[in-house]
Image 1 (cartoon, helix red, strand yellow):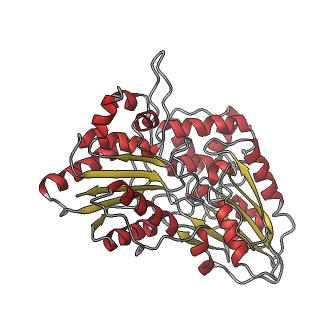
Image 2: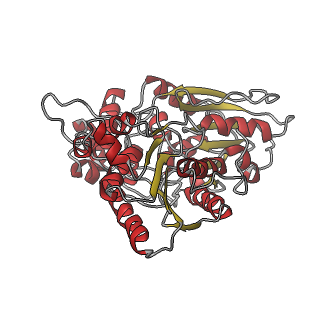
Image 3: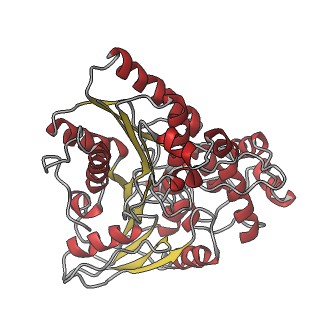
Length: 446
């Protein structure tokens, strides 16, 4: 609910303050995805009956407050939305609370998330065709909206979720499994709302902006199958209780499909996407007189390896002026993954997330290349489960780390990007941003 940073706002001089310039681009990207500036254009008219608001995600608090500010004051509005702990922004002056917001754990679910999911499902009881359900969905909803399938306990879901996160599985694979092991995801929430009309307002945090993947698509059809979920579990060696496996094999845990009549009359609106945020950052860079190249908003792969590829491109630009002329900014988004390496006996546990591990790979492959600065950060302000959004890489990153006794390969071996960049003061800390359009990466080549 903060004021937007206009692309035309004065940016720090990239040549004099490259880190501040990169941070400015990040802030512009995040502000483009804040719900207050995007949600109003997608709101339906109040219905004849009730309007019930349900939802989940890391942007849930700011989405609720934006809706409360924009919905007609004389139109009934009630409901429940769950967000991550410490992700409810300060209430704007003059905006009365009409929707309850509760908090739960992310990325590994907890009992509070299960209780919230049970309450949300209960609120669908008694809805009529005259009623409207507004579903506010954003990234993180898969963990926050946890309601295990029959035969699964919360402890089972926590273990499976943790193993998926550590496996290196991409977000589509993880959410396929989550949908088939849930009583609320994969379109089941929409089915429970019948016969009410459902309008889903969503902020995309996934490559391709598929609403069926965002927060495991609780209100949209699911084209994946039980067989798909089983194949993913087997691929990564993740076990489920025998009765649950039998249900997957028989198709008993199948989700509502695209041709299901339960979705008739429903609509889904993307109110913010990674590409829109990258384009906003690009406009800000151009306003500062810097050329811009947006690689993609759909990049996936192992974080450290994606970092190495970005480094190769940046070095080519810095050394040869190819394929882009200097000065320029190279932007990309998407959702990379981190495969957790086994710890050696006596080895300290590493800390960090996707953005930090990208920066480790980038810094190592840049090899101290002059005139190249970078920032990689998660747009929700939290890299993994740490207190930083990401990290900076500078021409002297490796040299400064060496003086602190830090060896980059050691930190890569134990997935400890946080420890590496913390030691040299290059963590990027924002706190929760109250939105989430996934990874933001900006490389400045002067």
